[in-house]
Image (cartoon, rainbow, N blue to C red):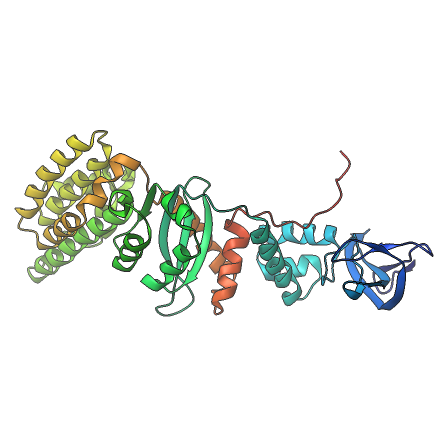
Amino acid sequence: MDLSVKEQRIDVWLEHVEGVAFPCPQCGKKLSVYDHKEEREWRHLDTMQLQTWVHAKMPRVECHDHGVKQVEVSWAEAGSRFTRFFERFAIDVSQETDTKGASKILRLSWDEAWHIQERAVIRGQARKPPLVLRLMGVDEKAVGHGQQYATLVYNLEKGTVEWVGEERKKETLDLFFQSLSREQRAAIEGLALDMWDPFISSIQEHVPGAMEKMVFDRFHIMKHANVGVDTVRKSENRELWKEGDPTLKGSKYIWLYRGENLPDRYQDRFAALQALHLRTGRAYALKEALAELWDYQSPGWARSYWKRWYFWATHSRLEPMKRVAAMIKDHLPGVLNFFTHRITNAVAEGLNSKIATIQKMAYGFRNKSHFRTAVLFRCGGLDLYPETHPIPG
């Protein structure tokens, strides 16, 4: 062992007992040492804040069936320059900060810290049991700059990202379903998604009984309703401004709140706006009434309520809200499937928020494979750690 305070490191050399037999890494047969390769070193956990390095000349054995092979060591995985315990620690650090921050804490290069994460994801995916996906969500996520998207498949029961694909095309989701067996696809009981036609087409092609299983996400539908309200507000605001009336100025976000979530600071102004009987107020009332659809427990009562709301919306003389009503009508079976499966993409939206934080920490991802690795590393629910011997206690 060598300790250098000046270089802030400890070096430890390991040697094996003379005459010991090592197993062939492929068949496990115990064999005597054939020769040794050049010395290698592995970064280990720091000792008193000093970097600790393990050194060893790697033995090789000659197997009758497999030829000359380098033996495996217990303290590190094949091909790794870090001990298993160091990798475990590095994974914990990397999950609490971004790659740049982890590299500073661990005193590694950015590439070294990133490759530990890549190996962890590969390790975790190799350990995954056959996928049993009963309730799944599908959503898209913007990646990098411009119109670049990724498709994400979520396990709604476990709250994890199961799969990440490039683009948001039908062919993208096709690749996911093609990775499943016929039995796995048939086992899917419910799918939450927005009303994106390429996703719908892929699900209909690959999932048996898709029309009874697809649930169009209520939160995406309400986003469309909010857009309708805001479109009415913009139009009405322009008309009022032409007459010198600033009534709606600065009111955009007031109309986007649900009634019960409106902050106290907006209550007085909102009440005053409502008393004016504006078109925007009627659009808001339609939006709020639509949200009550998902409060019903019975599919029959929900359908009856929908019919009343649809009549109101289509006779409102508010074109943006009429378009929302027509959109929902075109996708009505999937909307009403909610009352059978009771699923939403709320889990996906929560994970998307976490993914957005990951993107901010990384200042975006120019490399789509890096985006995939980062998402699965932090949101994939994978067993990332290398195997180590049990820690006492």
